[in-house]
Amino acid sequence: MLPPLSWRDRVNALVGYCLIKSGRLKHDIFTEQELNELIAPHFPFTEPLAVPIGEGHFTCLEAQLSMPTTTNRLTVQILCAVEVKVMGSRIYKAHTAAGISALPNYYPASRSLHLTDTRVDFIHLLNDQYSLVKDTQFIIDKLLPLPLSGLGSLLGQPIRSALSLVSAGSTDQAMDYLKLYLHGNTQRILDYHKPRLAKELLARLDERALEYTMDDNHWREFLFARFGKRVAVEDNQLRFFFTEQP
Image (cartoon, rainbow, N blue to C red):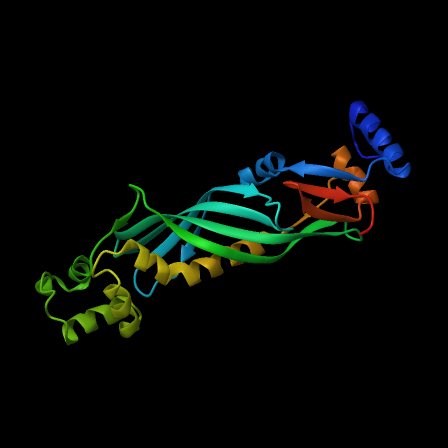
């Protein structure tokens, strides 16, 4: 049964079918602009970021997809906002650029496009007016019981006891984390969070199912679902081939 296509799309599908069968149409293409329009509705989104003390989260604000000519990988650069709070006070925030790439693969049996070998290629700090970092003294003052507030020089048991209450007993990890703020180095703090950020980014992408099934309501996808063989990145385009690998 034919899909609910408009008469114009049915004509396009019929012409496309004839060109494929005659060998004159080797592939269809999706440009970077078309793919960016497809991914734009999925942004922004916010996810939690585990920290030794307090709470953190990162927001993926927007993304820009590109297809380099030197590789068969799709690459996406994501603008992220990272933020950490302790006891309701913001102690760190920064904008970052995260680069993610993946291999496109098409599976004719399921009529679906899959992204495989997904990896985080880089996470860079963006130095802009959004950045903020508070020093360790401020954090310690917030964590200490009120009678001890301001006694930041007391680096003994009272502070460790207070930290244990707000870090589920992981005092050593909390103290090591607080030391990162001694010099207000935004890059150093981001470096600490990079492994967790990369892991969370990949996990979120995996949850969103890195695959797309061809839609019969679109005549181009209708054709490729029935006659498509493979996909590849070539000349800054995602090409959907109607022929086997040469």
